[in-house]
Length: 171
Image (cartoon, rainbow, N blue to C red):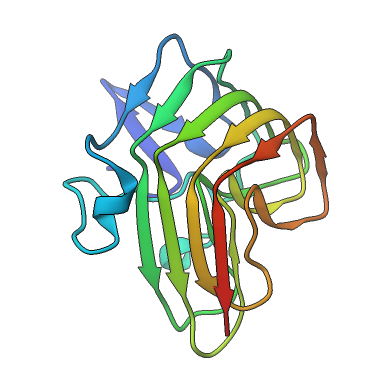
């Protein structure tokens, strides 16, 4: 029985919101180039780790260490009428959450909400935890004022991180 809050691994149920994970190699979710995806969606769509999607209010409180590896080919496109969705690799990084030592390349995030704000960033839609030593060159497009390269809204810490992609916010 999998949900946005848990996943099954054999007979064990794993709580995603507190998962501690380390990358041990580069990951490619979709091949091709991000420029191609504006017109046609790639094979796999991304659901943010922790956040407000689909009524879930699970915020990521674990420790994600990319160990300097790269995640590429993330595609996430959302249109919603529900307020305060967190959209990114992580939807919401909560107080005890930490995302570090990660590269995110060749990725695309697009979110629209005609009735209220969304939190949209390539690493985290909403950050209350710590984002440290991350890099992103993603394309980020959305409505509202809470759209940015690394984190759409941050009340936490972002250290030694940089963004070289593009951001388009309208609203």
